Image (cartoon, rainbow, N blue to C red):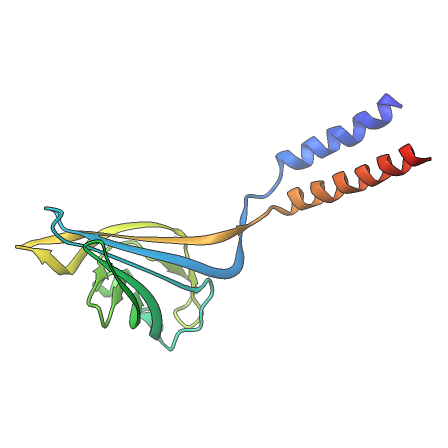
Length: 180
């Protein structure tokens, strides 16, 4: 009986070692933009959500894409300004305009990192933390440091879901055996 249990346990251990990394759910990504002056007299925090794989309002292949109305929650120097509707553009760094910028609020992230993959007409956001500067806001001649953080909801590994199902079946069989 012990030999019969050893083989499945060994196979399960091998499968778990080869389990794929967590993948993204096809839901929404959360964005947080933080802009702080070098002397800490100015701070701007913007948060919003967009689909992980959005359909832009306008796109130019190789240059970028934009959205005309996005609900953005704004905080200025710690004061909650509420939710406003803003337009924004996500630009390819090859345009030399930065990787992301707000059109209405004039906040921007000038960085050499691209925050999306795929063609501009069908982009997919890349979760991560992107550092750069905000050339719209500055104290004196020093541009503010800016950070854009993109977080997406992970989905559990398929191996983890399979293991959970097998454990549920094992529990059901054990309960059935104890009742008999």
